[in-house]
Image (cartoon, rainbow, N blue to C red; front, side, top):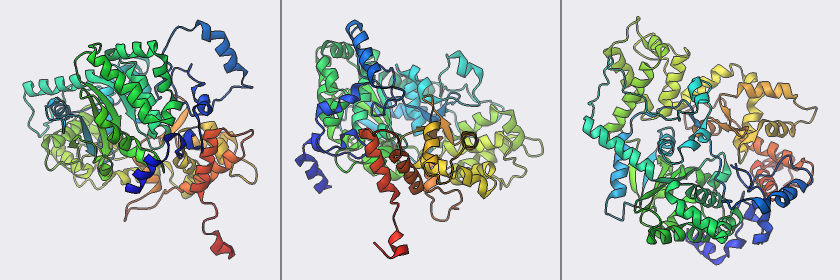
Length: 585
């Protein structure tokens, strides 16, 4: 770490190579990165680094600038990233966790500067960290963006997808009283205070960021800085900041993606922190605390560069420069919590059931909600046609023990019960999967009953796990065919294979595909000791196909595509082990 730190300070930031970054050229001056600002007219962006499509000859952008630039009123050129979280759907509900928001609110308001700068929520994968962040986003001034963040659910009712009034992650009414919850209910006064804490936190949220390992752009520091600035100036609490950016175009230039690539610390300090601090001193910003939400700091570590910072190391260096009224709420996985150990934040664990009874009560409430809201579940878990308190209590205890606190495990298991794939005929519950890995194994066994049926979709999964960002169906089709020697895969055949994968590779609103959950992606490429290795994918094969695809494209690759080609060639390691076979190294 010491050597790395010394090299960071001894090399000028504009010369630092960054893997998977447009700044990875040896001497990228600001004017060389001007192409990053060519898509400023787009309302949302997957990433400004992405190559433009369907533009011929380069004349259209030039004509647009000539035609519209003189008449366009002043506007903010910063564009937020387009986040979409497949695990959060338009019909997702949010159960419990009021105690968590109350603890966060209490910690951020306390007078101890060693713990009131922020809160880090720590839990294993599938324990609801992203749902908690998304719940705050949904209730914040950016709540309307939840319709972009949440994926369309195939099971959503028409009011969710057409009415446009209901946001995802709503809190359902109190559970049905006919089935005992088995836990002591909190007093109305305590519940009221906890709900007020959640709403108070949500009103303070001014920006958010999701780090997603299968979308590399969300894990890069320049994109993080640019996205946060773009959302800050869209927050109604910070109208004065937006007005200052409009009055002082040089601040917008400082926050452009090319400037953020060159020196993200200077961009964030001079373009965000210092202006906000000055506006507060001038009383142009209300005398209240504000909150920045960041989900999945550990996901960003997946794209850790050889030089420069990850998002968490960037925050560690910058947190001392944050004004005391700008707080952070971040999430990190238990197994990777070491990455956030230097952040001076209060820690809250969601997976310590043995020391926090509230976690157990939340799981109980979720189980109760799923059973009460679905006649199909009630029918499939009733023994001899009966569903009494004793039956419910035994099932609830069994599922909580298996879940170990994982809402994802409970959700997927209840989904299987609701659809009739699991029917509990005895009180031993032997048919219930004992872990999240077994749930995925059962899903894949049902979808791909034979080895040949899985082999048909395996190349698609290999490419999806190897890609640095979500790909469209057409891009996946071209990548698969890049590996064909005799003939090529027909489009109709490809579509059939994609249809078989539709429950695992969710189509986003920008028509690209993402895995339904990070845990499923990880399950495809890695298993714990003792777990079955069926349905394992080969990322090296995916990297090989992507390298072939980039190398066979017509025309010249742009900077980002060239870097991605090099990345996939290195990761593919095509000739690994070949020397042993041919006797030549």
